[in-house]
Length: 355
Ligand code: IMP
Ligand code: ZN
Image 1 (tube, rainbow, N blue to C red):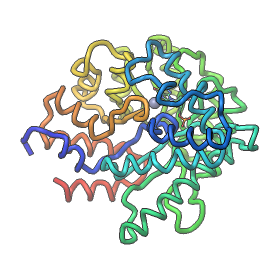
Image 2: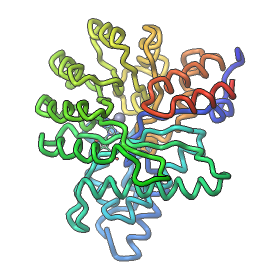
Image 3: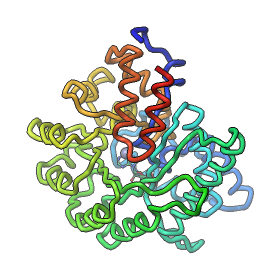
Image 4: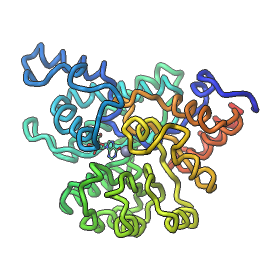
């Protein structure tokens, strides 16, 4: 367990992914095949081939240009029931192939007026895709679920309170299994979206409703200097999150709050370094700071379709740039599982068997 860590080790490691956005996790090849199918049906004719429309990871000069990928391209391509299913299933398959055994996939409910899809129907479509994929793997794998996948519903910072409330209502309605025999459900609610959109205080009642209904809370936290004012960060703490995404620009007096409340950090190395949300290289990432402060850290990919670094590679990067041994990498995987909202027992067992 004191051996240097390599790719094969990180791949075999049973991993929990807690911070992945569905639409940002769709591989370019998947987008390409959906685009080709639509072109053949004379649909989306104004959309460029995704291999041209999407820049290589690291080529998004500003946060705004990164967020435009979704509104200007991916959402326009994934605009009907078939394409939502065709995008969701390969995302699960990609995580499975990478050795992810537990996934909390987050997605923002979208209304798509053409085919009459509202927030509830969007979530239903994603859940059906997850269950369809689950069932296929279950029979393929001697009646075992290889990957336990659940959902988190995201409230976008740009939403009105009424929209935020609707997301939370859909989350509450999806807390239970779709039907007996299904394996996935909605575990919690997230706050995401372009961090330059402020303020977010109007969304507080939606998160209060989520908390009161027993949903877990995670929020994108201190992602850019604009979204790291004391006012915003204190407001977000008041929503009682059990996890924080990114947590880059956290002032020292609030680091103590994270420690004392035992809040876990969802950290995404490649996303932050390639999109220049953090200064310097991987070795300068605030992963080191949170780890040294003894906080619970869960590595995540954020948008693997854009940044093209799988979760196993995120573990490898952490090991390489922070000098972690095999034992310490297993400890990091345990730390992620301790922050998960379900499936802890099974995952700890998998790690015990691995160690
Ligand atoms: P979706 O929720 O499945 O549609 O995934 C894409 C959405 O995730 C985008 O519209 C963003 O709002 C959100 N997202 C993806 N990456 C980030 C991030 O780094 N910070 C905040 N929000 C993000
Ligand atoms: Zn994120």
